[in-house]
Length: 424
Picture 1 (cartoon, rainbow, N blue to C red):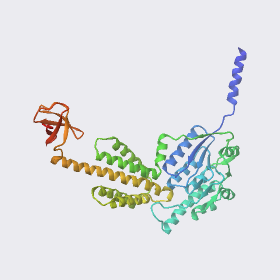
Picture 2 (cartoon, rainbow, N blue to C red):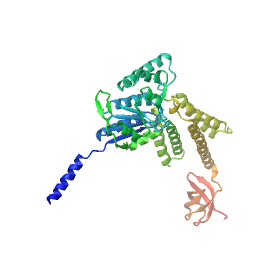
Picture 3 (cartoon, rainbow, N blue to C red):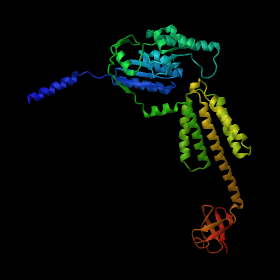
Picture 4 (tube, rainbow, N blue to C red):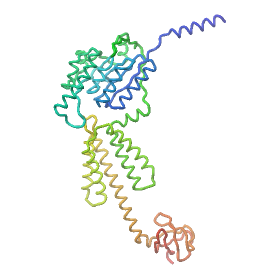
């Protein structure tokens, strides 16, 4: 019995003194940098702090993005209680423009072979900058970058050239010019080489990294983050907006369907939320409205396709001009064509059906039902139900009619038909 207790105590002591396996929380920045990117990185840093992680690994493969979001992210990185490791990966990837700021803000910055960084000249999204405005924006961005780079012990003058001269660097050039700390082929090798390395935090404190054999755990995005990140692409937003418009129009054309209206409303709102954070060009908006108007006219008037083609061209141009900014955040030509052409065809088809239905209603009101042949579904003695043109009608007959017997419409009184037996 004593032996069993001793064994238990020894096992408990061994477990208590066993080395704790380090955890590294990994988060990806693999697209345009925007508000949702700042939220995701902020939540990943909070998770790492709660779990007492050894570090946060930020995987960078981005063409850049919004400056305000980049400032928010760098602020979160430099104030993080957990060391942040930025790693440009995979081979062929880049940390361009705003991505360079994130790379330099980290406690440790590394690049995979075959990657590049830099080209951080700011671009005004709402139009062309004059010389004075460009100088002010560049000075502001340069001062911000220098304050980050100098704290990390990197070459601030060279880093500033990525803004002034749009200079870019391969991974080897960045290492040789003291802009990054390491070139590593993969994450596991990166963790091994960083083990025992002492880093100076942004506030001046020193901290030793313990990353050997660390467990790299990917940050799990919430459902909200996944949805917002998916629709943050303006191409997805444009597709959702077009589908939403079709659904809403279908509901107005045939009230009572409900499903197209509900789904269309949801898609339209998601599309608008996607485009709301981006700078909108009102010429593009006007062209989209013009395109929709031409589709309506094509369905109403005979133009032999001229109005429809003009509407399609206007919609494509409107999509291409809708977003101001660098090519990475604009709607692609392939997306504009793939959405506009089917949208034009479907819209004109639905509108043609709607106009035809309205004309048919007018014909019926003036006797369009006269001489139509139907079938009695209940005895007519003299009133009952008949089935005419695929619809059930209240009817009144001048002579008794048995169920199943064919009848002919001889008059229309509001929503009631006057019929008589066929062939009598």
